[in-house]
Picture 1: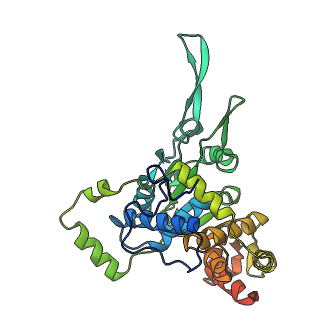
Picture 2: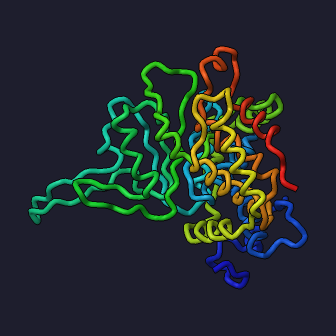
Length: 346
């Protein structure tokens, strides 16, 4: 329960280690939403001890965690994709594992295997690194299709079946996968079926000039980035579960549900797209818009929330026609045109 009296174990209590710059919230914000927004601000503050910039990246990561989905992160090397994911896990009091995908990685290296125990003459299951609360998969497109397919069941069903026996994952279960869009030698493109299992795909760009200057100043006397040790956990698994329950209760009116459906439906009718989005995309937009609203201290969704999450939800679920690709179009251009075309509910 999110009660203000329980300050010893309640990680969402705003009285514990208050932040100097709390998230701005609406005047009539319910107490539970205020505590959630404050807790999110504390997570941001912990990550901000090391990472400069990337505010949108961090918000989308937290929103995806609260929405109960997984995240695919794409960006050139060296822009803190893996570091930010690791720091997010460090700011949460949950289990964390990292899997480096390589061309020789086998499915059993990820999910685990059954071994014979000579002591009791019985077979036992040795769980793989996927059995954790937060799993960072580095360079997910480095492994062959057989290993990538091992993630299908666990990402969608939150369980692993080995030798006919099903093993449930502990909650929360959150996968963050990274990939490099530039270097394609020795990589295996993720199939559309697996891309669709990621709630959002976040594209990370280079930092601005001022942010890069701040990075140099922060680490000019700290080559080993020892400031990572200062990042402390501020949310436990119970608090994350409560945050997810709060997000589910965020109100979204029927007109906005129709707005989401119209946006996704238009991707299937658009002449610039070879492949449109499925109903799973509609559900993902709804979940993410509710999570973003809750993070910003609101118990209702606005059209701005939907427009904010439309691109990260849709950009990996649609495919441009060959003609548009040759003309230099990007999925962002098409999504922005669709949003401009669909009327905003009043």
